[in-house]
Image (tube, rainbow, N blue to C red; front, side, top):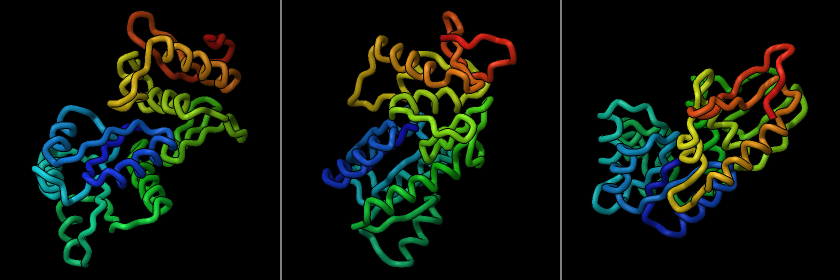
Length: 229
């Protein structure tokens, strides 16, 4: 999933970015409110991690602008501002959760998982395609009851395809889903990831089908149909 971090403290931004990337997410980071507002207008995200004390545009203003545009993007506020009144104010502005600095990384990760679980797959905790089961927020997959071992990139690829059931996902959309602003994914790298994912999905009742000239489709394999290698 693609996550935006709006945080002007370099150490906090680096720590949470590393944690999220290790979990297989694509992460973009900005250091002021104006850049956060611009990024939210231009790029579809699955979660916003928002500091309130941002330069140029306060985090509360970023949140207000986001909600005025009518988006339901989940927002986790992280801030040094304490007190019940402040928490109530931020939640009333449209935040989904609130975490006071300093915080334990394990708690941050748990809150991220909870928010993503709530907002992915229309609230369903799992997706099932053929014999393949996916827990998107938990970054877990199974064929029947057997865990499917995937790298972070392979799971990100599977996640991007599963998020668009019965719809073709273009190569550009896959690259965007798999890469942060400071990362690159070559055509060859994407081809390798698709090839490896297909091998791991063999005999799962699910395949990644190439739609020539358009992209890829994750679909259930009908009985008697050969899976594309």
